[in-house]
Length: 133
Image 1 (cartoon, rainbow, N blue to C red):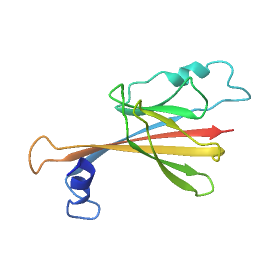
Image 2 (cartoon, helix red, strand yellow; image 1 turned 60 degrees about the horizontal axis):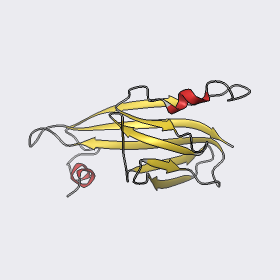
Image 3 (cartoon, one colour; image 1 turned 90 degrees about the vertical axis):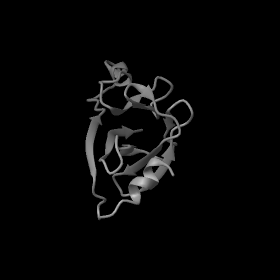
């Protein structure tokens, strides 16, 4: 059984025996992103985080403890309420398709198994808000 399925099977609503941390980022440009855009490509040290990829303005890396997180679910939401579930590729990259534009929120959750049976599951949630052109 995978970690997410084990977590979802816990009793309670929401499931008990858990802790969580939320990691949030916003990439914001005023007038232009010409200066300092490369800073978005640098991790800031969050346990789970999105960073921009130099490949394109629609490509992002998902990192866990500073390392790429391949084949991981990412939920994308528009300001208008649209939602799509995507997955990072084997290189931990997520490419948002051209259909998405405007204010966009990306969200990923990684759940860590407890150290001992009956212990707490820990979930880290990373969000990134961007405006896609």
